[in-house]
Length: 127
Image 1 (cartoon, rainbow, N blue to C red):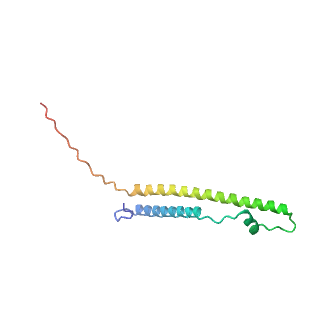
Image 2 (cartoon, one colour):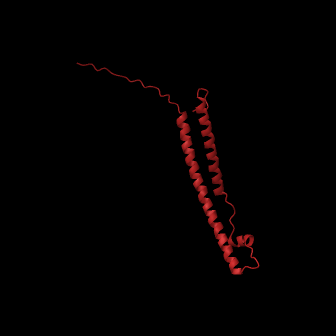
Image 3 (tube, helix red, strand yellow):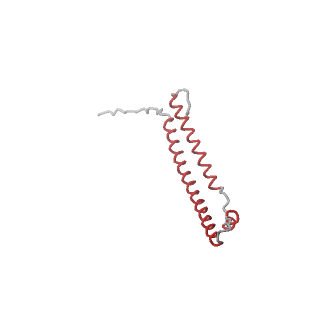
C-alpha cells in the first residue's frame, strides 16, 4: 500500500495526506491522555489542602471557615474525578478515530488486482 504513488491522482494524494495527519494527531492525543492518567498530579490530603489553601479571615468564625474549607476540598476532589472521566472519554473517542481513519486509508489504497482464476471444464464422454 503506497499512499503517495506517482500513479495516483492529486486529489487522492491530498486525501491520503489529510487522513495521515489526522491519524497521527489522534495517536498523539491518545498517548497524551494515557500519560495524564498514569502520571497524575499529586493529590493533597485534607490537612495539606487546608494549610496551603484555606486562610481564615479576621471577621470569619472558625467553624464557618472550616466548613468552607471542607466544601472547597470536596469540590477539588470531584473535579479530579471528573477530569479522569474526560481523559478516558477522550481516549475512547480517539481510538475510534484511529480505527475509522485507518480503515478509510486502507480501503482507499488497497490493491484491487485480483488475478482471474482459470476455470477448467471437463468434457464427459457420453457412451
